[in-house]
Length: 326
Image (cartoon, rainbow, N blue to C red):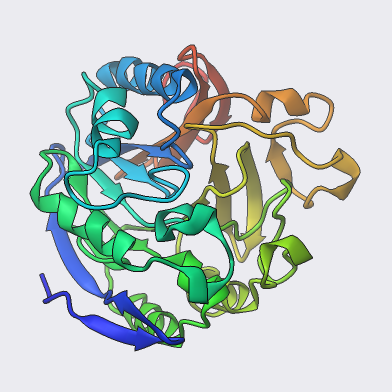
Protein backbone atom coordinates (compact mmCIF):
# COMPACT_ATOMS: atom_id res chain seq x y z
CA UNK A 1 0.00 0.00 0.00
CA UNK A 2 1.33 3.41 -0.90
CA UNK A 3 2.20 5.81 1.91
CA UNK A 4 -0.61 8.13 2.90
CA UNK A 5 0.65 11.68 2.90
CA UNK A 6 -1.24 14.96 2.84
CA UNK A 7 -1.80 17.04 -0.25
CA UNK A 8 -2.80 20.65 -0.63
CA UNK A 9 -6.13 21.00 -2.42
CA UNK A 10 -8.34 24.08 -2.66
CA UNK A 11 -6.68 25.57 0.39
CA UNK A 12 -7.26 22.46 2.54
CA UNK A 13 -4.85 19.70 3.47
CA UNK A 14 -6.61 16.55 2.36
CA UNK A 15 -5.52 12.98 3.08
CA UNK A 16 -3.92 11.71 -0.11
CA UNK A 17 -5.46 9.01 -2.26
CA UNK A 18 -4.29 6.45 -4.74
CA UNK A 19 -3.72 3.38 -2.55
CA UNK A 20 -3.67 0.03 -4.35
CA UNK A 21 -5.15 -2.84 -2.32
CA UNK A 22 -5.38 -6.54 -3.16
CA UNK A 23 -7.82 -9.07 -1.73
CA UNK A 24 -8.54 -12.74 -2.40
CA UNK A 25 -12.03 -14.01 -3.16
CA UNK A 26 -13.09 -17.11 -1.24
CA UNK A 27 -14.27 -18.50 -4.58
CA UNK A 28 -12.00 -17.73 -7.58
CA UNK A 29 -15.01 -17.93 -9.90
CA UNK A 30 -17.53 -15.90 -7.92
CA UNK A 31 -17.66 -12.70 -5.89
CA UNK A 32 -20.74 -11.68 -3.90
CA UNK A 33 -20.89 -8.35 -2.07
CA UNK A 34 -23.43 -6.11 -0.35
CA UNK A 35 -23.59 -2.38 -1.03
CA UNK A 36 -24.74 0.03 1.70
CA UNK A 37 -24.96 3.79 1.32
CA UNK A 38 -25.70 6.60 3.79
CA UNK A 39 -25.72 4.05 6.56
CA UNK A 40 -24.28 5.83 9.60
CA UNK A 41 -27.40 7.13 11.34
CA UNK A 42 -27.07 4.96 14.45
CA UNK A 43 -30.84 4.39 14.35
CA UNK A 44 -33.23 1.45 14.33
CA UNK A 45 -33.45 1.99 10.55
CA UNK A 46 -29.73 1.21 10.23
CA UNK A 47 -30.00 -1.74 12.59
CA UNK A 48 -32.88 -3.27 10.61
CA UNK A 49 -30.94 -3.01 7.36
CA UNK A 50 -27.89 -4.48 9.08
CA UNK A 51 -29.94 -7.45 10.26
CA UNK A 52 -31.33 -7.94 6.74
CA UNK A 53 -27.83 -7.84 5.22
CA UNK A 54 -26.65 -10.40 7.77
CA UNK A 55 -29.59 -12.67 6.97
CA UNK A 56 -29.28 -12.42 3.18
CA UNK A 57 -25.50 -12.71 3.14
CA UNK A 58 -25.59 -15.86 5.24
CA UNK A 59 -27.45 -17.53 2.37
CA UNK A 60 -25.89 -15.71 -0.59
CA UNK A 61 -22.29 -16.19 0.56
CA UNK A 62 -21.22 -12.54 0.67
CA UNK A 63 -17.48 -11.95 0.85
CA UNK A 64 -17.45 -8.22 1.60
CA UNK A 65 -19.46 -5.03 1.99
CA UNK A 66 -19.02 -1.75 0.11
CA UNK A 67 -19.79 1.32 2.25
CA UNK A 68 -20.73 4.33 0.11
CA UNK A 69 -20.10 7.31 2.36
CA UNK A 70 -21.93 9.34 4.98
CA UNK A 71 -20.56 6.62 7.18
CA UNK A 72 -21.08 8.55 10.44
CA UNK A 73 -23.84 11.17 10.66
CA UNK A 74 -24.09 14.08 11.06
CA UNK A 75 -20.50 15.27 10.98
CA UNK A 76 -18.09 12.34 10.92
CA UNK A 77 -15.88 11.35 13.85
CA UNK A 78 -13.52 13.22 16.17
CA UNK A 79 -10.91 10.45 16.22
CA UNK A 80 -10.36 6.70 16.24
CA UNK A 81 -11.70 6.51 19.80
CA UNK A 82 -14.89 8.46 19.13
CA UNK A 83 -17.85 6.57 20.71
CA UNK A 84 -19.73 7.04 17.44
CA UNK A 85 -17.65 4.23 15.95
CA UNK A 86 -19.35 1.85 18.35
CA UNK A 87 -22.89 3.25 18.18
CA UNK A 88 -22.99 4.08 14.45
CA UNK A 89 -20.94 1.22 13.00
CA UNK A 90 -19.74 -1.67 15.16
CA UNK A 91 -22.98 -2.18 17.12
CA UNK A 92 -25.11 -1.95 13.98
CA UNK A 93 -23.67 -5.14 12.45
CA UNK A 94 -22.90 -7.42 15.40
CA UNK A 95 -23.11 -10.68 13.45
CA UNK A 96 -21.86 -9.54 10.04
CA UNK A 97 -18.31 -10.86 10.03
CA UNK A 98 -17.16 -9.41 6.72
CA UNK A 99 -14.66 -6.76 5.61
CA UNK A 100 -16.20 -3.35 4.90
CA UNK A 101 -14.51 -1.24 2.21
CA UNK A 102 -15.51 2.38 2.71
CA UNK A 103 -15.29 5.73 0.93
CA UNK A 104 -16.05 9.15 2.46
CA UNK A 105 -19.24 11.11 1.91
CA UNK A 106 -19.85 14.81 2.42
CA UNK A 107 -21.03 14.33 6.02
CA UNK A 108 -17.77 12.54 6.83
CA UNK A 109 -15.97 15.84 6.16
CA UNK A 110 -17.78 17.43 9.11
CA UNK A 111 -19.99 20.48 9.59
CA UNK A 112 -23.16 18.55 8.79
CA UNK A 113 -22.06 17.89 5.22
CA UNK A 114 -21.80 21.53 4.18
CA UNK A 115 -20.76 22.26 0.61
CA UNK A 116 -18.44 25.09 1.68
CA UNK A 117 -14.87 23.71 1.48
CA UNK A 118 -13.50 26.36 3.85
CA UNK A 119 -15.68 24.85 6.60
CA UNK A 120 -14.60 21.25 6.05
CA UNK A 121 -12.89 19.44 8.88
CA UNK A 122 -10.72 17.40 6.57
CA UNK A 123 -8.91 15.62 9.39
CA UNK A 124 -12.15 13.75 10.05
CA UNK A 125 -11.62 11.69 6.90
CA UNK A 126 -8.09 10.95 8.06
CA UNK A 127 -9.65 9.59 11.26
CA UNK A 128 -11.70 7.18 9.15
CA UNK A 129 -8.56 6.09 7.30
CA UNK A 130 -6.74 5.61 10.61
CA UNK A 131 -9.60 3.57 12.08
CA UNK A 132 -8.69 0.80 9.62
CA UNK A 133 -5.92 -0.17 12.07
CA UNK A 134 -8.36 -0.30 15.01
CA UNK A 135 -11.18 -2.42 13.58
CA UNK A 136 -11.33 -6.00 12.38
CA UNK A 137 -13.87 -5.06 9.70
CA UNK A 138 -13.39 -1.42 8.69
CA UNK A 139 -11.15 -0.65 5.69
CA UNK A 140 -10.52 2.79 4.23
CA UNK A 141 -6.91 2.61 2.98
CA UNK A 142 -7.08 6.11 1.47
CA UNK A 143 -9.77 8.59 0.54
CA UNK A 144 -9.74 7.06 -2.96
CA UNK A 145 -8.13 3.80 -3.95
CA UNK A 146 -8.11 0.74 -6.21
CA UNK A 147 -9.27 -2.61 -4.84
CA UNK A 148 -8.20 -5.65 -6.89
CA UNK A 149 -9.20 -9.28 -6.61
CA UNK A 150 -5.90 -11.17 -6.86
CA UNK A 151 -7.02 -13.69 -9.50
CA UNK A 152 -8.44 -11.06 -11.85
CA UNK A 153 -12.12 -11.59 -11.18
CA UNK A 154 -12.84 -7.93 -10.33
CA UNK A 155 -11.32 -4.49 -9.90
CA UNK A 156 -13.03 -1.73 -7.90
CA UNK A 157 -12.37 2.01 -8.16
CA UNK A 158 -13.24 3.58 -4.81
CA UNK A 159 -13.84 7.32 -5.24
CA UNK A 160 -13.92 10.38 -3.01
CA UNK A 161 -16.71 12.12 -4.91
CA UNK A 162 -16.95 14.94 -2.37
CA UNK A 163 -13.69 16.49 -3.52
CA UNK A 164 -14.54 15.80 -7.16
CA UNK A 165 -17.82 17.68 -6.78
CA UNK A 166 -16.84 20.49 -4.43
CA UNK A 167 -13.10 21.06 -4.83
CA UNK A 168 -12.29 20.33 -8.46
CA UNK A 169 -10.05 17.38 -7.54
CA UNK A 170 -8.31 16.96 -10.89
CA UNK A 171 -5.54 14.91 -9.28
CA UNK A 172 -8.07 12.21 -8.45
CA UNK A 173 -9.62 12.49 -11.92
CA UNK A 174 -6.20 12.02 -13.53
CA UNK A 175 -5.46 9.08 -11.23
CA UNK A 176 -8.70 7.34 -12.26
CA UNK A 177 -8.01 7.90 -15.96
CA UNK A 178 -4.70 6.05 -15.53
CA UNK A 179 -6.14 3.29 -13.36
CA UNK A 180 -8.91 2.25 -15.74
CA UNK A 181 -6.29 1.69 -18.44
CA UNK A 182 -4.38 -0.66 -16.14
CA UNK A 183 -6.72 -3.57 -15.50
CA UNK A 184 -7.38 -6.91 -17.13
CA UNK A 185 -10.03 -7.95 -14.61
CA UNK A 186 -13.14 -9.72 -15.81
CA UNK A 187 -15.37 -7.18 -14.05
CA UNK A 188 -14.74 -3.53 -13.24
CA UNK A 189 -16.82 -1.56 -10.74
CA UNK A 190 -16.77 1.99 -9.39
CA UNK A 191 -18.27 3.18 -6.13
CA UNK A 192 -18.50 6.54 -4.42
CA UNK A 193 -20.93 8.72 -2.54
CA UNK A 194 -22.45 11.31 -4.89
CA UNK A 195 -24.93 10.29 -7.56
CA UNK A 196 -23.91 9.92 -11.18
CA UNK A 197 -27.47 9.47 -12.39
CA UNK A 198 -30.42 9.64 -10.03
CA UNK A 199 -34.15 10.26 -9.85
CA UNK A 200 -33.82 11.55 -6.30
CA UNK A 201 -33.52 15.09 -4.97
CA UNK A 202 -29.82 15.45 -5.87
CA UNK A 203 -30.29 14.28 -9.45
CA UNK A 204 -27.68 13.77 -12.17
CA UNK A 205 -24.04 14.83 -11.88
CA UNK A 206 -23.48 17.92 -13.99
CA UNK A 207 -26.98 19.16 -13.22
CA UNK A 208 -27.16 19.15 -9.44
CA UNK A 209 -29.64 21.64 -7.92
CA UNK A 210 -28.38 24.95 -6.50
CA UNK A 211 -28.66 23.71 -2.90
CA UNK A 212 -25.89 21.18 -3.66
CA UNK A 213 -23.42 24.07 -3.98
CA UNK A 214 -21.83 22.78 -7.20
CA UNK A 215 -23.23 21.29 -10.42
CA UNK A 216 -21.10 18.15 -10.23
CA UNK A 217 -19.62 18.88 -13.66
CA UNK A 218 -16.24 17.29 -12.92
CA UNK A 219 -17.88 14.12 -11.58
CA UNK A 220 -19.97 13.93 -14.75
CA UNK A 221 -16.82 14.41 -16.83
CA UNK A 222 -15.06 11.65 -14.90
CA UNK A 223 -18.02 9.36 -15.55
CA UNK A 224 -18.13 10.07 -19.26
CA UNK A 225 -14.38 9.97 -19.91
CA UNK A 226 -13.12 7.29 -17.51
CA UNK A 227 -16.03 5.07 -16.47
CA UNK A 228 -18.49 5.11 -19.35
CA UNK A 229 -18.25 1.79 -21.19
CA UNK A 230 -15.26 0.75 -19.07
CA UNK A 231 -16.99 -0.47 -15.92
CA UNK A 232 -20.00 -2.71 -15.63
CA UNK A 233 -21.59 -0.87 -12.74
CA UNK A 234 -21.27 2.45 -10.90
CA UNK A 235 -22.67 2.47 -7.34
CA UNK A 236 -23.54 5.57 -5.30
CA UNK A 237 -25.64 6.78 -2.40
CA UNK A 238 -26.27 10.44 -1.43
CA UNK A 239 -29.90 10.16 -2.53
CA UNK A 240 -31.64 8.05 0.10
CA UNK A 241 -33.41 5.76 -2.34
CA UNK A 242 -32.90 2.47 -4.16
CA UNK A 243 -32.63 2.92 -7.94
CA UNK A 244 -31.37 1.02 -10.99
CA UNK A 245 -30.80 3.03 -14.18
CA UNK A 246 -29.83 0.84 -17.11
CA UNK A 247 -27.42 1.61 -19.93
CA UNK A 248 -26.57 5.07 -18.62
CA UNK A 249 -23.62 5.25 -21.01
CA UNK A 250 -22.32 2.61 -23.43
CA UNK A 251 -23.72 -0.24 -21.39
CA UNK A 252 -22.56 0.94 -17.98
CA UNK A 253 -25.26 0.39 -15.36
CA UNK A 254 -25.91 2.79 -12.48
CA UNK A 255 -27.24 1.80 -9.06
CA UNK A 256 -28.22 4.08 -6.19
CA UNK A 257 -28.17 2.31 -2.83
CA UNK A 258 -28.62 5.05 -0.27
CA UNK A 259 -31.18 3.72 2.21
CA UNK A 260 -29.01 1.81 4.69
CA UNK A 261 -29.51 4.50 7.34
CA UNK A 262 -32.12 6.94 6.01
CA UNK A 263 -34.85 7.08 3.36
CA UNK A 264 -36.28 9.88 1.24
CA UNK A 265 -38.89 10.29 -1.48
CA UNK A 266 -38.03 10.27 -5.18
CA UNK A 267 -38.90 13.06 -7.60
CA UNK A 268 -42.14 12.68 -9.62
CA UNK A 269 -41.73 9.89 -12.17
CA UNK A 270 -42.23 12.30 -15.08
CA UNK A 271 -38.79 13.74 -14.18
CA UNK A 272 -36.98 10.38 -14.06
CA UNK A 273 -34.09 9.29 -16.26
CA UNK A 274 -34.98 7.14 -19.21
CA UNK A 275 -34.32 3.42 -18.82
CA UNK A 276 -35.03 3.45 -15.10
CA UNK A 277 -35.60 -0.21 -14.31
CA UNK A 278 -36.25 0.26 -10.60
CA UNK A 279 -38.40 1.31 -8.94
CA UNK A 280 -41.32 1.02 -11.37
CA UNK A 281 -42.88 4.38 -12.16
CA UNK A 282 -46.26 3.20 -10.90
CA UNK A 283 -44.82 2.01 -7.57
CA UNK A 284 -42.06 4.44 -6.52
CA UNK A 285 -42.46 3.51 -2.84
CA UNK A 286 -40.50 0.31 -3.53
CA UNK A 287 -37.40 2.46 -3.95
CA UNK A 288 -38.11 4.76 -1.03
CA UNK A 289 -37.83 2.32 1.86
CA UNK A 290 -34.95 0.92 3.86
CA UNK A 291 -32.81 -1.61 2.01
CA UNK A 292 -29.59 -2.44 0.21
CA UNK A 293 -28.01 -3.78 -2.97
CA UNK A 294 -26.44 -7.22 -3.44
CA UNK A 295 -24.14 -7.92 -6.42
CA UNK A 296 -23.17 -11.41 -7.62
CA UNK A 297 -20.35 -11.52 -10.20
CA UNK A 298 -19.45 -14.92 -11.70
CA UNK A 299 -17.20 -16.29 -14.37
CA UNK A 300 -18.89 -18.09 -17.23
CA UNK A 301 -22.39 -17.87 -18.64
CA UNK A 302 -24.08 -16.76 -15.42
CA UNK A 303 -22.27 -13.42 -15.59
CA UNK A 304 -23.34 -10.45 -13.50
CA UNK A 305 -26.49 -10.29 -11.40
CA UNK A 306 -27.71 -7.75 -8.86
CA UNK A 307 -30.61 -7.53 -6.45
CA UNK A 308 -32.27 -5.00 -4.20
CA UNK A 309 -33.55 -6.20 -0.82
CA UNK A 310 -35.76 -4.41 1.66
CA UNK A 311 -35.19 -4.25 5.42
CA UNK A 312 -37.15 -7.47 5.89
CA UNK A 313 -34.69 -9.34 3.71
CA UNK A 314 -37.18 -9.65 0.85
CA UNK A 315 -35.92 -9.36 -2.71
CA UNK A 316 -37.68 -6.52 -4.51
CA UNK A 317 -35.65 -6.23 -7.74
CA UNK A 318 -33.55 -8.51 -9.93
CA UNK A 319 -31.06 -7.52 -12.62
CA UNK A 320 -29.67 -10.49 -14.54
CA UNK A 321 -29.61 -13.83 -12.73
CA UNK A 322 -33.07 -15.18 -11.93
CA UNK A 323 -35.83 -14.66 -9.43
CA UNK A 324 -34.87 -17.79 -7.54
CA UNK A 325 -31.30 -16.97 -6.69
CA UNK A 326 -28.97 -15.53 -9.29
